[in-house]
Image 1 (cartoon, rainbow, N blue to C red):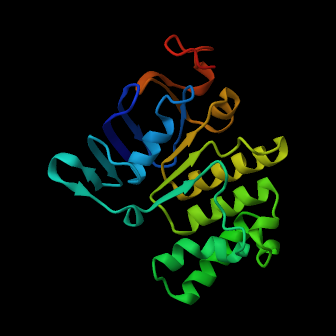
Image 2: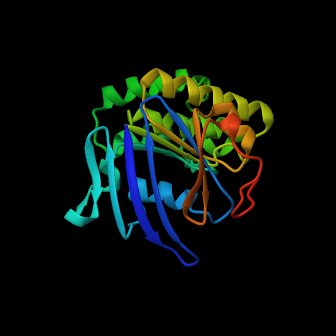
Length: 232
């Protein structure tokens, strides 16, 4: 389970936000541009330092500013998938998926086994020796998802992962994400600006406006328009 409480003074407002995500649950985080969605993910991952925060993942304290607890990014066991996939274009699919494991100095035989498993699960095994720069957008997102999950994370976070994909690829990535979040029972946060994404993939949704929670509930019951920042 993820439990996070954070405060971060930004240029135009102060992010003051708390959320809880259960194992196997997909929380969709929505809001207008600049509402604090990506900042929230970056604070949880450790890429941005909050003014004050307490973040606990699966009973491990990742951050507690009042006690100077701040687990390094590489030790937080968080899988992070970005909008542009962030694959290494000159590396093969196999090497892209293996990247996080090699950074953790895991043995070669274990890496080979886990990489093969996740490439197969993401239906990219036949692309193992293809340079990632030659893949389609949907294939790149599958590579990014495999790379995020192969490290056996305690949390999966995805920041606008469907924006650059066509309809068919979008549905495939949504289906794969739901399947494996449920299968391995990890909490998951998906940032998106599209209501259809929240109803397709989310168990719960939360709308952020100017750094504060405007609404939270079942995605199908989300208000059509936000009363504060008018995000759709």
